[in-house]
Amino acid sequence: MQNLLNKVRIIGDPVLRQKGRPLALPGDTPFIIGLVRTMERTLEVAEGLGLAAPQVGESVRLFIAAPNHLDELNGHVVFINPELKPYGETVKREEGCLSVPGIYETLSRPSRVTVKARDVRGNSFTLDVGGLAARLMLHEVDHLDGVLFVDRLSPIKRKLLRGRLRKLRQGGRVY
Ligand code: NI
Image 1 (cartoon, rainbow, N blue to C red):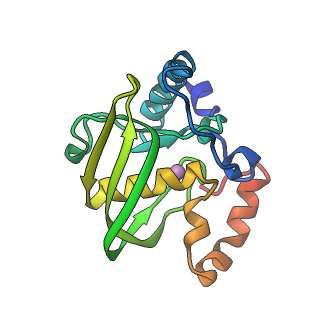
Image 2: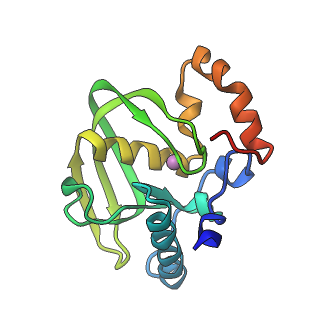
């Protein structure tokens, strides 16, 4: 199981900085099924809430959410080519990321989002979510655009983290 966790790319890996390509449905379906299987097992072992494809080295627009964790997702676990419309007031909430291990910081983001995406069968669906589910969507779609949550911290907070982030980029651990 440990080798699954080794698949998770850590800050400093160039794939985390690429903009993922949109997936074609149904053309990419066999690739998507294999990718989702790997990601679901990885997320389960890592005990994370969400995982984006670039975090396992695939620069494509897909993320998954941990199953049965967030009621607001109506059972949706796989989000392909997601499009977000954030709205509502800005709220503060602590975030962490499997690709930035050991670092947890409070970050402001919009409180709600409408997400439109496709599932593994290619069916389009739309959800309107708040709270932790909204935060998850915003965090994961950032991954598909090559953005990590630490990029969104204030300059002061980033400066305070500089040494720990450098250590992670060099392959070290900060926890
Ligand atoms: Ni993340």
